[in-house]
Amino acid sequence: MAIQPGPPDQQRGSGGSDTAELRLRPARRGPRALLALALVLIALAGLAVAGYGLRGQLKPRTFTPAQQKRIKAWEVAKRWQTTPKTQLFPAGITYKLGKRPSTKGALVLRATRLEIAGQVSCSVGAGSSKFTSVLRRDGCATVLRSTYADSTSSLVVTAGITVLKNGAAAIDAARFLTGGPAVGQGRIARQIVLRPFRVFGTTAASFGFPQRQLTWAIAAGPYLILTTVGYSDGRPRVPVGGDSYAYQEMTSLARGVAAQIAAPLAAAPPVPRCPGVPSC
Image 1: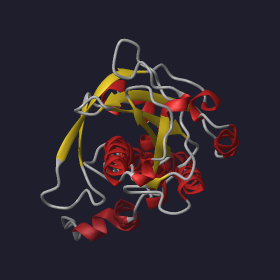
Image 2: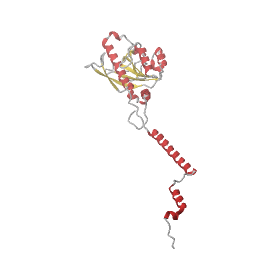
Image 3: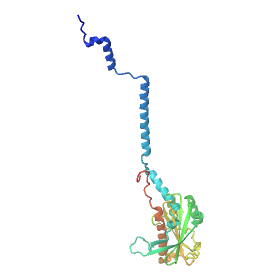
Image 4: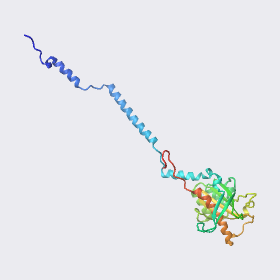
């Protein structure tokens, strides 16, 4: 009698079931595989950190309010060096005659620049030993000067830009001279300072120490702006207080020239620009 084959499971026997179980069981990772996986994870973490650092480097820089303030102060403090002398001392300056320059209908006059002087030390430009000590205390670096004549050529005025260490020093020096207002339009000084710049071959050829009539002072940022007025005919100092018109002409000229020179020096600079962005 022929032997019938049994069911497939019986043909495989116990060995067949063990083989199927081995196929279904997940393969175990060896030490090398685990090490390779760990290295991959470490490499990915390193790339993430590097990417974050690169993003931080590429991020636009910003300035704090304190940094902006220091940058602006630095911009103003270097203007006497970066601005052409012909801009520091304009060729022509208009001013108004009268005690209040903002008054409507006031007579508008013009002062014309005669020449720009060479840079001098504070002791030479100050024109007063007592005032020189004040400037030395306030960190004076140098004095720039130029001389102007009024439209009638009867008055001449030397304008001076005194470079001090900061704005507080400029206000201190101005108040020493005026005893009061130091900024804006300034005020007439209580003593005559600033050495006149004599321009030979012009109406200011005779403008020296004895010809100084009065001085005006304005603090403008770290600068003290001074103007000293005199007659162009060489007459020595005379009491102009008794002649109201002459006094008004002199003070208007001195104030007008000083204020026009001071304004751009003290003007607030633009907001500092940060790399990669329009402003900070």
